[in-house]
Image (cartoon, rainbow, N blue to C red):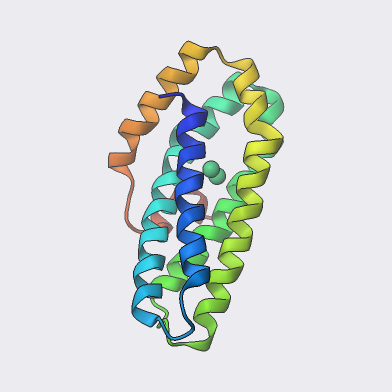
Length: 157
Ligand SMILES: [Fe+2]
Ligand SMILES: [Fe+2]
């Protein structure tokens, strides 16, 4: 599978989960907990393959994406820390939904920048074959992703 197609599919998957969270009732604590756990798994796996495989490849092969990649890593940093906080937060806590709402805003902004600002540069610079090969490496890499959001590289300062 093409690397950028794979990443965009992941983006769609989390967006669908975000919508379900937004539609969940005020008191749907069990459902919200379950959704946040699934969102965490998806986002941690996605951030892992981006940071381990896609981002380094983009910087190496398309140096003009460097600043975008560095900003993306800082955005991941915020997201993985929020995910780690949500792990221990009771969905009945008044801060839970507020925190998820800010998480969703951050991720939507991040995804938009990836898809609009710099993924097209990567697509233009890499050949079809290279993108396929990169996509295969990322699809396999998913199996090695950690569960703990703070085990992601960008979690560190
Ligand atoms: Fe990202
Ligand atoms: Fe992404």
